[in-house]
Image (cartoon, rainbow, N blue to C red; front, side):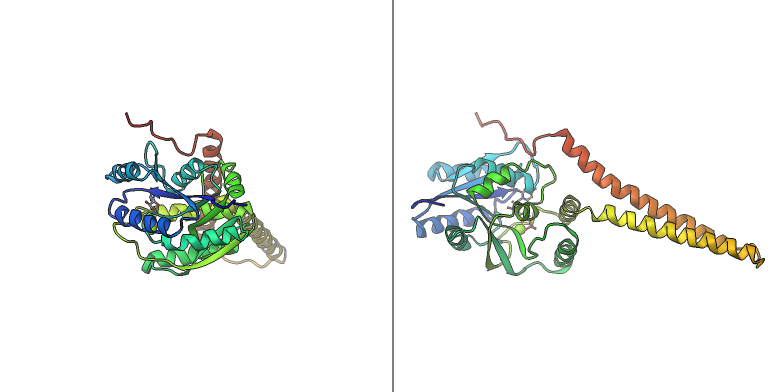
Length: 313
Ligand code: UDP
Ligand code: MG
């Protein structure tokens, strides 16, 4: 448990966030000024931004050393950037994880810290409402309802990255070296005492979401495959069902022949449908196996999940 002045690091992955950074700096600064009982640090992880984000953070850091920058060698994606930031924050009493775009309001952080000081090792910020609309919204809802029902680890449907990890949780987290990472799932997997804080998710303060829809879909598929064997089990069930059907059909034709009931030899349509249907099922099966195999391949290569850029000279 924290002593009188705990050190809390705020870990923020940044990818082309130039337009929101000034407001982010200001709101974090105000937060620090209003909560002097905590030793604050901000760890920005520049995930290969192509704008002036890194320069802006460096400039901020030179006037206020609490603002630090970790630079990755290229764009590794949000999950890897988060892992890099958490690794850099190692040794702090607690780390807050949040997005740079101010959809996660920094003003909530004192509440997260309060829950942690009251004894929780993991604090999740739970959305009371969501700002996304249309396809994105539908996608999120669908993902969460499917994910919640089908995976082996339940995750709260209205949580994202925003939250806090105490030091034991941070240490546990640093042991998870898998490449396909899904933060809310991993956080649930740790299983430490968890508390929730409700909040209203905000509109992105400025700029465009860097996570394209395609990327979000990939992320959802990733989360699903890395936390569930259900697709494999489902294949087995389908196999059992289809063979049972085939067996029954065979039996039916044998009995029919024995009883001497002859019908005209038609059935081309039936045959074609059956062959394509079964072929389709087999291809889907191979695809599902491939999803897992690809993941296994990625994991056994044991490449690091991110690389830090050599320091500027
Ligand atoms: N981000 C990142 N790497 C990427 C894409 C995004 O570090 O390749 C960061 C981004 O700067 C922001 C957070 O991840 O801090 C969430 O991104 P975004 O707002 O684009 O995603 P969404 O809100 O749609 O999940
Ligand atoms: Mg966002």
